[in-house]
Image (cartoon, rainbow, N blue to C red; front, side, top):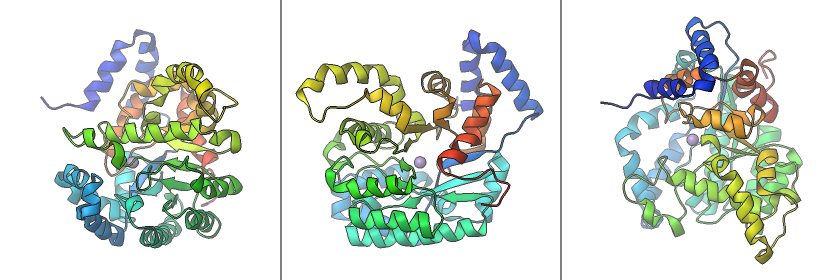
Length: 374
Ligand code: MN
């Protein structure tokens, strides 16, 4: 029998007796459609033809193959045509999908397979082109789209300038970085210009997954582990923890990082991360002013991308609270309507649902309340 995430979420709710009253209320609300909040989905992918073409070339090149990208390309091969077409659509097709699923606004980010592993100058050029196209799409549909500035961290100075251009000149709302850059992590001091720019502009950085860095990709090459099943979360969680443990948030106390997929597993490990940090910190530098969990609670937001049918939504609600969560689908890689219906069935208090659906995103990404066309 095929796995049906709708049955899964119904079952998981029925199993939670403490939640059964709220669950019944949520089900009723979902059926009657009585209350509908503005919905902003904050991890929605797009690409442009130039980047798709260049990516395919890179994935299949000896360098791309060496880094594991060929396995990634094979992993996506079955569905790549449909996903590819949908991610290139920044017009009516995308809007129709949003309308069908009940999404008012998509915060768009460049899903750049391999771009951060390419040669720096070419990647910098391609991200600028993607940002120009994104800004055009937002200008065409100001009520429906907003976007994040794509960066090529391979050239940190250029990336910092591009972030400034994206925010000040193109009206974009922050940055997206697709995890490691040619196997390097952003805790390396050479990437400081990017964080300095984000802090000066007071905009968030969405740390979006990539496949595991070349130095740890090998065991992920089998069994489909390389992508969303586990590789993305393993890669991105390590990256986020490196940012915390290098003292980045002592240096930039107001810096905001957004993680998809309900925090890439970190919320589940938060207590253990703290205790093991305390156990090992004597042997390490730098010394942190606070516990890792404190930075995670104050400097990070998690989004529900691809995880809306998971009991982990309620777990994050309990551990982090509604103020640190935002709605996301991970379009076009996840089924928008199913994800939304699953999210609506989560037994969240109505005020918290409003925070997750739109209020937090409006604050974090400065999206306005939808009444001004901004
Ligand atoms: Mn994504």
